[in-house]
Length: 244
Image 1: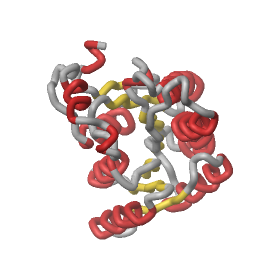
Image 2: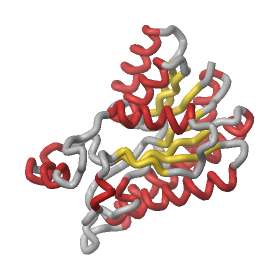
Image 3: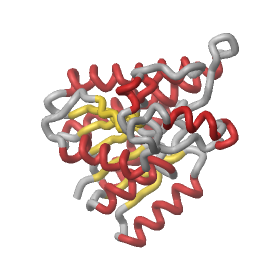
Image 4: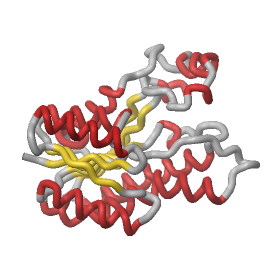
């Protein structure tokens, strides 16, 4: 039996990835910060399907000390760790003229700092098990999104971290990343008009949004199946980056 830790897994892409790996026989450790109720509900559902197969850990990823403690709890849940998915993310606009230090710290800490320190905290266990790390980046870490400069920089940094760790941790640990395109609209639906959504879809050759399962399958491929792939960024975007 193998074990996976997924950060920000109480809902959306993280939850779908947790369900997918659980279905494939993994023990799943679900991290959450503010979505404790949803995280516990998911853990209860998975444990109902297969007893003692899911656990919940909590941590504020803005604080490295909590990250280290959470890593210890995650390993202790099943006495092992094989895959880390750095999925937790913060996303909101930061126009250049109006952006402030608080926004910089928040976006950099969650999207870049936390994956670095959590990967380091789990390094001994992942090395022992010849494990892998999958980082959730963004196509806008490759092609910046207007008025989201700090977010785009953070995700670009996470892409660089993916590649640098792939070099540094090989051959013991594989490190790859998934770059979603238009998969799920932001939770704050009011922040994006129907016209804005249509403008995005017009740039997608597939002419539709993807689904959470598309991301889960990509994480499964890179994290579990692709044993000779490391340092790669897999865009799951319906071909959108072809026209950027």
